[in-house]
Amino acid sequence: MRKITLFALLGMMVFGVEANAQIQKGNVFVGGNFANLNLGFDDPKIFSVDITPKAAWFIQDNIAVGGYLNFGLQTAKDVPTTTSYGVGGLGRYYTGKDVEVLRHGRIFAEATAGFGGVNVSDGGGKTNGLNLSIGPGFAYFITPNIGLETLLKYNNLVGFGSATSQSNLNLSFGLQIYLPGRSTARKVQNDVN
Image 1 (spheres, rainbow, N blue to C red):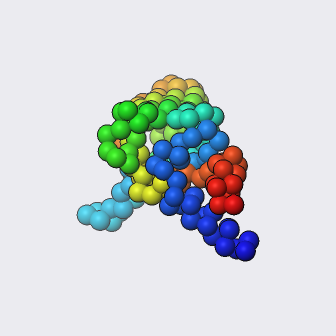
Image 2: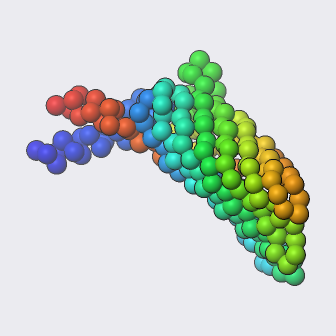
């Protein structure tokens, strides 16, 4: 009987929760964004990728706070390698259902603050310090618990090194998994019983 209840609970969490439930207070999202992915199909001497794993908790409906890690690498033959990194906090605000663009989509704004750096090998420039970013995004929920995202962010790195600041505009794509918090899981469990 416990196995049946567990499977029913999991099924309801994955398929039975309405599309709004994933951004409720107490829930969690984990996932990541990918930017600047270049495998060099035309010129196999180039490789470039930027990966940003994230995790956040919804402190109230539509508002999440959490953290991120960042690692970027750009390398090409006969050119110095550029490495970027970062760690910090993030905040997200999702618009309400009244601003819904697509039936299963939500617009959001994300801001981050943390420590980061961009270092170029072979005597290239370096900047390490405070990393700030802000921008709009869009999440499309392919299931009630899985969202595909696109995010356009302005990034600014201010600190010390051979360059005191660096900034860029970054378009990234990602995947987030929205997990129910304890209170949501208890509600589903009570509904099953």
